[in-house]
Image 1 (cartoon, one colour):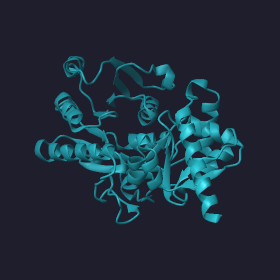
Image 2: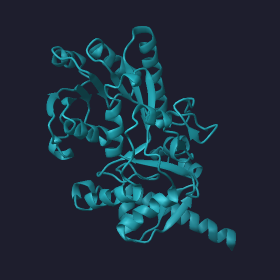
Image 3: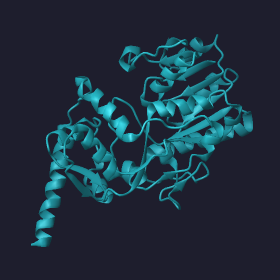
Length: 345
């Protein structure tokens, strides 16, 4: 199998790259080289990796470097706008047997008419620009598929995590470390809503095994497929699993998503919470199981998060402080406590 990955070193794509090499595929990895192979655990296996150092936004340079190559499949893990997808089409038309676009489960209709989500659930998210851009990309790709026969497969991940970051509902601009630090220091942490809304976490290695079963799969052409673990947890359980893995008590403070969106506009809680994580979602993976019947998730969240935290705690470069977010949490919690005292008098 000869495949092209644009990006290839992110949360989802790094795991897929490693699995592709393990499966013996011939992998061409096009990226700017900002993150070396060593920094994301360079893959090992019978396959080979051919780095292509190029900024995909430099279309002329990318065209030159891709000119002598053809692929069984290509996947762009960083495309975000219709203009970027249109560029991929120009670069890859006639050069690949399958084109993967990584969309997002956040694109599904908000508010949902049903918490049971299938690939047929309407796409409409008025709260989050990120989701609207993904929807626009999908619209373009369906047109290219219908009008030009461009061989697309659209994949919709939900919340996928790896060893470099803890998946959370409420965090700052520098990732998850500050929330971990608060738990380690015995400080309270904010959980949106009352913590009982339902969510699904997927380890990136599980995602990779499902994804690679779709590559070269003729039945996946012209299809949209959501990939999740199917393990449903509420946010209280998610945060408790994190605290348990750290060996610390969880001091949870529940704050409504609406309040957080108004109090912290700089953190885009409107999109990330109201338009996504605040909504209970149960994913129906029947379509994935039909296309990839050998796939089943292997990593339970409480197991995966222990490995993630073990990695973060032994890699100081992943421990990025976020004093502004820490101060924001302290202010919100203090305001909540004052309001409770006034109301209970």
